[in-house]
Length: 382
Image (cartoon, rainbow, N blue to C red; front, top):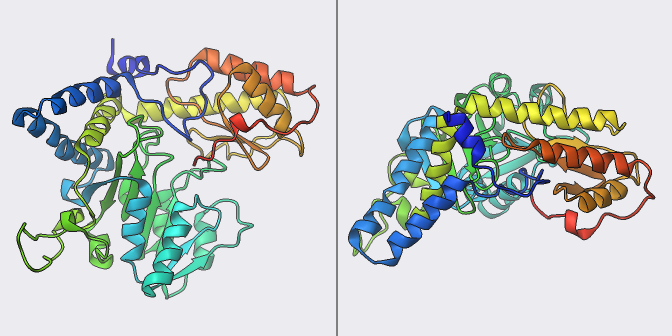
């Protein structure tokens, strides 16, 4: 069995699971790692505790490998939001963002602006559906010091062109929320100055597996305002707060959870062994398969067909989303229905059975009465 085949064999989910953009059920390898760490941590033996503690450095090294970055540029954090708070609270000047972003970016930016007073937020026109280089170019002025954007839009599935955006942004910082694309998109991460991500969706590592990369230039311009005890050089017993640590370690509040790091390491080893370009190709292929099924039943596809990862947003005519949601639930298809849109997100290991269930549900929805979507298919997730 090849590494890619082994990776694909680790998908053990409900037949109709098409909701990877909301939550990534843990892979077989991750579950095995978690169980082993639980057993090792139960004995209290120093050897077991030290073994688990080593996952932190291992996870940082694997994240750095994926991002083609130096290890000292990577730190582990509880979530994507934690990383974005570190980045935006330490930033001065003006940050450009879209109000349509997942709230992690706008909330962190607004909190930083209101509390510190060193940052101003400039929002793009809400009517702009995708954060394109042209849209950002029109918003740039001399006061702008950074642009914050999602690699993949959580609503529409639009895949941001990072190199093109980098060219437009110039010497300003580019802060990227990578949660909807990390591990399943083959991109040039060097275009970003800050990458904030998490392993609980497409990486399949579970909650608590966040990480961040702060480039050397980002560290020069982003003060480690929220550095906690783990982010300083102070020793236990020191009477004064020590200075921030060197590298991305400065952007840490507390020590990382080593068991979460173990899950992240196991998931990233699977992905890198399989080859992220190969995984990304399968994810994009399966997304196109969803689009073809929607086309066959006359359901409009909102997602850009040329720039997408795994998220496919369907935009049925007004009032039909409830019918589709009901048929999806009846067929055992797990997806997200929100604001009249149907968000379907297959992964590399999504089975033929899932697509068959989706096809049957969409076919059945074409003749059903207009109804409100059942609450069961309205998860309040990203």
